[in-house]
Image 1: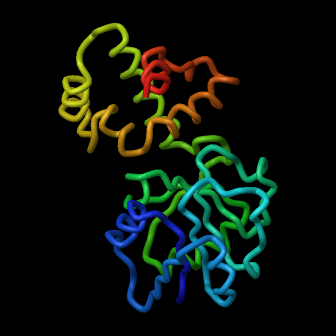
Image 2 (image 1 turned 90 degrees about the horizontal axis):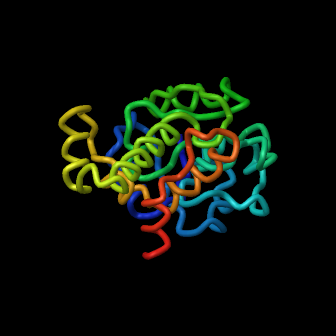
Image 3 (image 1 turned 30 degrees about the horizontal axis):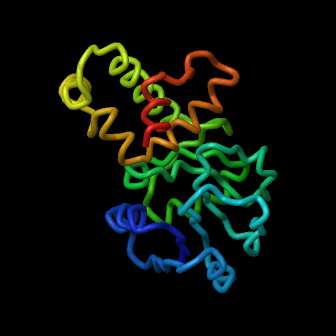
Length: 207
């Protein structure tokens, strides 16, 4: 089975560290345009950035997995062979991928061959994990703004107290704070739990 991947170096490394079943051929495309050269591939993973709606095609009907944390399948009006995943840094090399899809039967065979686990979640902004982690990061910025503690101390407390792999500030740096901010901004329009901490806004403005 052949899969085509378009990803930056960070995500490429995460994928390379993720275990694959034997007889899987992974080809890394150099650009989005190069993907169209592989019309016979069994699946496509477009993980480099949020996909541009104008670039969408059906890729011959093969399953296509896109990094679209912010925008839903419905918003993008994607063909049925597309599925959304969380392609943020630190979320790719995980035991279980969460995804939103309208064609679970098609992706089931692909993931069985890959030897990867997945779970289907609702087609909502942030899926599940990104929403939760973004909220945790936001709460950490509220604590920072209220001078509860320093970034390093909050990171250490969260890692020791929750056994998370990273503290909230460390995690936001790996993901990219602007991505976290954009998700919170979208979610806060319909849910006040996601209102952005002033300290986070100030940090982005000043940097």
